[in-house]
Amino acid sequence: MSTQQPEPETQEAPQDPEMKGAESPVDQRERESGMADQTSVDDANLEGETVHIKVFRYDPEVEAKQEPRFDDFHVPFTKGMTVLDAVMYARDEYDSSLTFRHSCRQAVCGSDAFFVNGKQQLGCKTQIADLEQPVRIEPLPHQEVVKDLVVDMEHFYDQMHAVEPYFQNEDTPDASALEEQRQSRENREKIKMSTRCIWCASCVSSCNIAAGDNQYLGPAAINKAYRFAMDEREPEEIKEHRLRIIEQEHGVWRCQTQFSCTEVCPKDIPLTEHIQALKREAVKKNLKFW
Image (cartoon, rainbow, N blue to C red; front, top):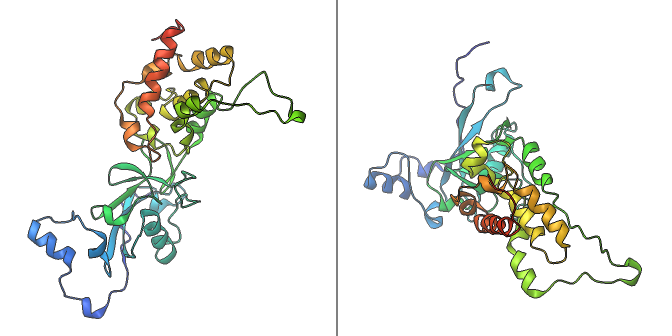
């Protein structure tokens, strides 16, 4: 098998002949600032321009693509273009083999979480105009890459399910009586932010502890545990059961309060704050810590 890295597949969109040879606003700023390839641009200045994206490529089933590399695409900019719009254009117009996940395109499904210019972000939520060029798009770190921008999410889902992410109440009301399981307004406010998790795994991929400890539950799973442990409708014995899950050796005490998970969460969930709250609850219950 050849170990030589294939030449990058560079494809450019057609340009207006009248624009050839003319210095664009982007080029002008590059020259004035002395920056070779990193340019800060705004939406207005990108009208009629192309956007340079560098997309991570890897395919273990194709010999020529088994060596990871970046492909360059120049995508015509349209107002409001997101990172997901750009990679979809590259796939549809230049290379149909470019593989990535996406679904709702409304920052709800969490399937299009990428590593964009060195930060975990949702492709459908991130505006191209807000990014420096070339826009570097990679799969989420700390997870095995299946192909191109697709990572293996199985371990992440296992960790999420490990905290039993569903409501448990032995005092289930009589369905025939249509009785409600009421929750106070104050308790609803307490857990409101934790319910916004969309399982995108951005927080886990930003966590240094999760990167070094594959058994660590991770911020997403602990946040899910917080959502139910703090719900007043679950009985006290269930809450203690949840605390015993999260206070295990690879649980909540592994967190070193680095706030990286909170910084990248696309739903603005105060993950570190929730982790700290569960630590306090564990101490109150006289549970062990590591």
